[in-house]
Picture 1 (cartoon, rainbow, N blue to C red):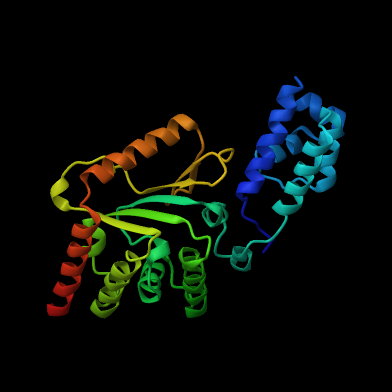
Picture 2 (tube, rainbow, N blue to C red):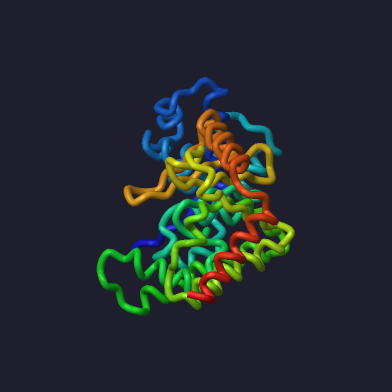
Length: 285
């Protein structure tokens, strides 16, 4: 398997700054490529974050665009930081997209889930049941175990000193649908009750009685970052592939949808009561 990496916030920032410098100099991608001695596709890949620019690449671009010494030094340092390996690269065979790298640097995560407990809140047994059920063909136990361990490693994000704030809203079906055996489902519901006690975690439930609502089109996540220069990203996962939305207009649509979902959801205390009730019912089934 060839090495893979997850584009990070720094990679997006570097790409954005290099593209902005070119545009401010009135150069087309083709003209910049000719002057740099690069291919047109290399300029495009670097400016869209699909390729990591080396420090020497960034130095050459800064020279071409006449960047000041402080800007030049800052962008070269950014290029060096982009090449640092995140913890998730140890699971490059599992995390093949860019989402984990973005999630790892987010300051605020707004998540709407329709079918499953959010990955950051899943217990090991629940995750194993989900991952096993989602494999189209029988996979060996080692492969499933590795994917479960990757998900458990990802879950530690919420307990880091610089942990992001997670604001998750789940459909009532998430807590009613039995995943795995009754005991593992009870443990999962208990884990949600415990997670909600964290100061950086909010969990709310959208009840069945809400009827038609703004989240009917499916689950999505909006990631926000500490630095204002880093725009929000919306993420939609699907069987046909993952979609990353960065257009400000589209991001606003997802934010508005999330607000409307929250308006229809139960308050956190009532949500915890519903989760505790679902857990109690499992004890008597």
